[in-house]
Image (cartoon, rainbow, N blue to C red):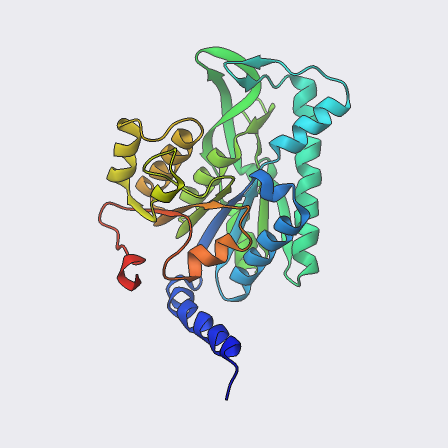
Length: 298
């Protein structure tokens, strides 16, 4: 008799088959951040997931931040952080450190992907004019070299995908005067997903997903349509950092991305579980007329 463990493995592969068929040759943008960037084992798991997506026929693009690592290096060189409305002011020196740190993180991720047998190329938002921006103000106040995206030129990413590379992007852009700006990685992932007509955009963060009641983890919502997501914001059911994230999700879907996922990057292989299993584990946000398919198999 065949061991049940092996039958279970076969069942998992069969369950994944329709999703592999559905998303074959489709672009998936993965925004990678939070604790999963700091823990070496989690980092390797996320990169393994992206490599597996690539090898089964998806076209992944990774967009990453590195805020905690930037803060660590700013502290290392003895600089005093300054904040306006809770946001770090990015002066010229901080901007220089941010660019160096993000480039370092980027090449570490490239190396990790290459070590798993897939060719990767790291690019910044400056390369090929990928991310053009203007100065972002916080409630009308200057917070330094923090950028707001005005234009995305996705040609470099399309060329890399066409030649079978896995692009890894860090969100440093420039303005019309070619001054360098740090860009929020969520914003960059959202803008890139729209520009390349991504089928999916996945945010890996430090939360399980969207809750109907922020205080109760049992109220995790598996699937949300755009109007429902908007209602949660309007009714005040979500707060803090979830509001800009949900607004990014809504914006991405209204601009052509088919499906957006909010996932807990601290859960090993959360990306694969959300994309390849019937139930999923995070929150999927879809168009108002989008097909809800997790519940069909519940």
